[in-house]
Image 1 (cartoon, rainbow, N blue to C red):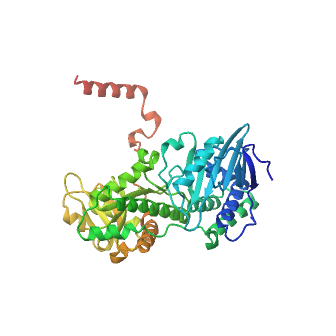
Image 2: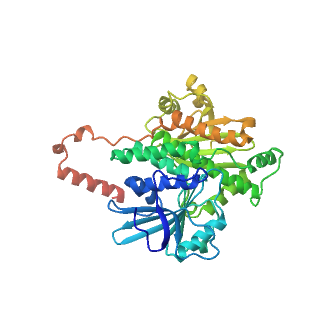
Image 3: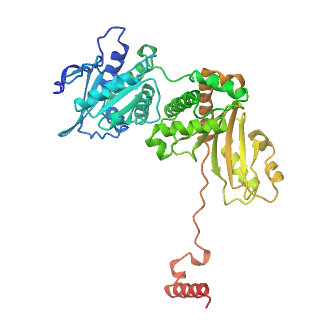
Length: 456
């Protein structure tokens, strides 16, 4: 067992096989996680790197559970679940850890108390773990006053994020040591078992049904409505669950697309989503899939009760007719199931876009050219639209259909579409050999072009 740090009165080194009562699910789950964080080098470095904390190959990670600190306020009735110490040479970075499993939620009172405890003991950060999803570890599910995080940084890992990182490291071959690979595999297996208390986001909040009913009655949604804020937060968690699921399915990290201001401030992201819901009665976002032809646009249209996924792709510039450009696209979508798939054509000038079912375009590729004679599309939107009807307002069905539609769209469209690239210019026939282009001839030609441009 590692020597206790000076700031601690007592603490246990994290155990891979903790001896705890059945009632201590949180302690058991956290101890196993922290033990793997400490003993699987690449896993520990990857998790900390997500916090912006660099751990070199020679860095040492020590973890403790059931910690009690020397400097503890009289009001601090609870003690944090764990402590992480990263040592890089003579430098050390420390973080308190608080974990929740099952239906237990993080509370402002507890986390604010731990931030104060960390500040009084010279701890650099507080990390929370729970079943609540966030798009980035720097975003937190609780609204904590900025004055409390000036000297102590607050981070959050969802258990789903932990599972995703473990699987990506395994599938990408990042763990070369056999024993460490087995440890990481067992961690993932344990976290996915119901006994661990880990549960992924699987239903929208109660406000979802209320908002859907309110819109169905013809009423609008105020941006100051607390139900709208709750729905927007649920939408964000659903997106984070979806990107985590896709990441595991394809073996690469899929992330939510955000502007810089939203990345730096989660409150702005929430406000933007609430504004969109109020103005359009629709929830919108986009995700970034590595190496995909473009970002994937996602929308949940509440009045229409539809979920849609779409990608915009530039039409090939070396094909002159609408049919030729469409044929290029259809060739890429040859294996896609046509159900619920549409192609939208963007035309030059002020001509409005036109949209057709994929099945109709396969049977009649001349259809778009007939509707817009003399014009050639400059880009295509490939879209899947799922009409859910009454399932749309059902909290669990909405999330499950969102996940299913994301996987279907990726398999049918995302993994098949490639961007068009213009071909590099060719050497003209009369200049195939270097000898055919003399220095003198090139100089004369350049002088002649210069005279033409100057009007001489």
